[in-house]
Amino acid sequence: MGSPSIPKKTKLIAGLIASDPDCAEKAGAALVKKFGPLDFESAFMDFTATSYYNEELGLGLKKKILSFARLVSPEAMTGVKLTTNRIEKRFSRQGRRLVNIDPGYLELSKLVLLTTKNYSHRIYLSKGIYGEITLYYKKDTFRPLEWTYPDYRTVAYIDIFNKIRSIYKEQC
Image (cartoon, rainbow, N blue to C red):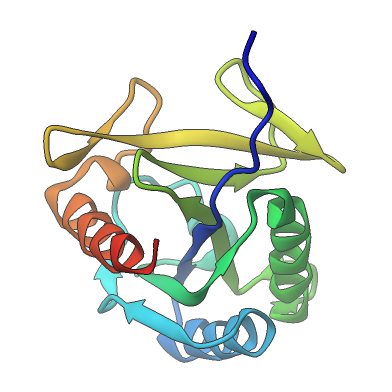
């Protein structure tokens, strides 16, 4: 029989999608105010993997990935997602979001994204929040799963998460 153990703290990450980079920067600043300083920030990348957000956020979408210096307990992730939802609402106009914030966390073995949407490959955390393993680490790199979003499958994103993993590994 196994014994329960307390998991290590994790590396908090967030993806920000917006048609207006200035709005994404302001939302990023709100995240820093709440979760502390960054230790990694990607450049803005064109977000063309899906048209899912175009109607709400507009055309010409850009995305960037942030990671935070302060490590976070996995138990805190429900609160993280609820907080990012509140920040998205603050950056909304006439009921329409101007920025999408996708929070998650990275461990040495995986990248988990947080969502409010249930599906067969998602695990319920609490308070209406689910976790999804999006990438797993094997043979010196992150690798996608069957359900991994198209952008997270790309070499550019995998390189970003490998860099963030290196930062996290130094912190463990």
